[in-house]
Every structure is written in C-alpha cells, then in structure tokens.
Length: 150
Image (tube, rainbow, N blue to C red; front, side, top):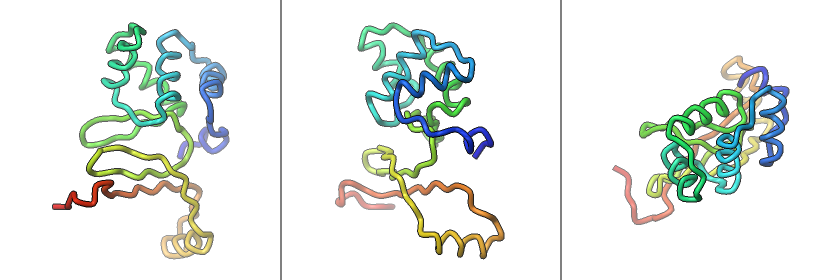
C-alpha cells in the first residue's frame, strides 16, 4: 500500500472519483469522464479492449490509445483498480482495499470486503514479525460445480 493510499479515504462514487482527479490536478477530459462513468455504471472488471468497445458502442468515440493512456493515469493515481492477470490487465472502479473472488469458469472477478478476526491478524504478526496494516485475499472457485479442476 502506498503512503498516499493510507491517508486517502475510499472513493465510493463517480462524483468522488472526479473530485479526486481534480484534487490531484488531473484534467477530467471528456474521454476520462467516459471511462470513469462506464466503470461506475458496470461495477465489474473490464479489459481496456472491452472499455474501448463498450464506449464506442454507446456512440462515445474514443481511440485505443486514449483508453490505454487514461486507464494507466487513473490506476497509477489510485482512482481506479488495475488487476494484473496472465491474460492481461482488468480495470475496476473500486480503488480502496478489498478482496476478490475469482470465478474460474466465467473468468469473472467479484469484489468483496473481508474482515479477518483480530486474533488471526495477531497470530500472523507473531509468526512473521510483521505488523499488518492492510490485506487483500484472493479466493478461487467455480459457479458451475460440473466444471472440474485439472
């Protein structure tokens, strides 16, 4: 976690995301606004290509390069989330600490909040000698129980 993330309050709406851009001195261009609006409307993790396609389907003409540059700028500033996967990056609207449930058959990533018990956190700290300040957990599973591993 970056020092700036520790003092920033979580972004919980499109208006807050735009306000954070302005606080950071980022220009909220038409294209940047389109991207933020789409991520808040969809509430799911999307690839840059999916974002490009969805915006153009909505008649909001935006170029590939503009999509990639804006996604990088927004994720680098902690305004949106970037999830690195073996098949590429996915972007989501939640920028604060949270965990993920990764569905292995649909490839969907579901955002969840997990609060670990204090005694478990203390146990981890005692075993490692590291004071836990934040955590994210990734869960993996199948929606379709007929899908098998291996």
